[in-house]
Image 1 (spheres, helix red, strand yellow):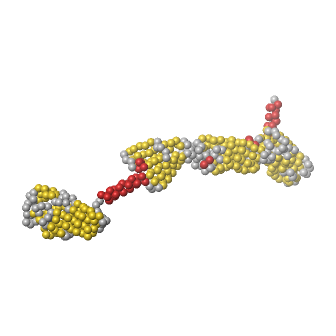
Image 2 (image 1 turned 180 degrees about the horizontal axis):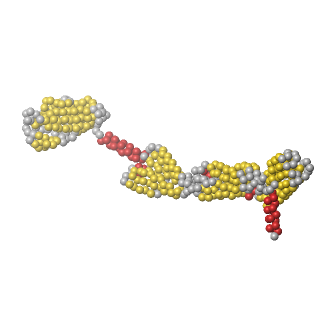
Image 3 (image 1 turned 45 degrees about the vertical axis):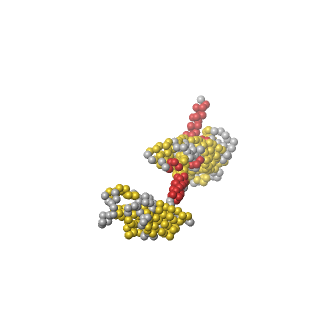
Length: 465
């Protein structure tokens, strides 16, 4: 019953405070504000908004109360006849007042002319600092540059120079703000992506610590870290002979991703290639070979593969083969080469005739070269020669000689002559090898040509080699 009576009493006081107050001073007093509060243990004043209308003679009016530690305005307010003025009254709390909830007290308006006064009831709601603010935050993704936190002053109270600390897994930020009654402000907080690159998508707690004067309160909120896939690929290649290629795929999003890297090699290059990480799969298609790496990569992690192809090994192999080939050729190649060739010659008398050519080529510098060729049996030497003329001819022995003082590398000579026979030749006819004696670096050496022969039928050459 007592509790019900108290509620009715408070309701009547609040109702009366909303209407104009009239006294014998012939004034109208109207309260324009409502739901005034005072924050417990915080030395900040509560503000009341009144409109005072003077319906009598010119006068000055003083507002005052016995509640609180300080009161504004302290001086009387001059209001002329039929004039209205807006009056803001500020009441500061007492240090020893610790009660929470609704508190009622009297406020007075006194005429300075005749000292008559008007008493009217005022109510204040004492609340803790933790009941003043509401915190909310917008969603953001891994590529966001800022997080936006919204703070609302939910009460009819001026919060001046309130220190705020915003702390979460994504940031730690301090701000100093002031709020008018019911004012909303948004704080933009820069995001350092390195500090949360390993976090996955989800809802994370936000802790906001506020401090006014010496009083602190903690507020809670939620941060929605929205999911987003961000895979960034980088590739670096260095060197030509020793080629090193580094391929990286970084998960800069906030989801666990299946990341893959694929490279292609041929059957040759694969023999000289090694990897920093063993491939997950190797697939061969014809002459091409595909290497694949697959891995689950968490946010902030990177899949990196280093591919090194060492072309120095095949180049060394090729170079070695070339050097061996050159050396073999060098050692197998004689300083002087002789090559003999024979061809059939048609003459008017129908005689059997052959043109014999000996090609002399110096591969190295040689001196005092003596080339000797012999005629086969049953043939005679024609008096006309092509190319170099023999230095000596011995018809009895069928011996021809050519002498050269020196031959330089690459220099060649063609020794050509014609042989004939009045007797027809059938079957295989063999020509002797041509020989040469020469000096190379003071040493006497010799050389020999190939053996040339031909097969003749009824006076014509069927085959010769």
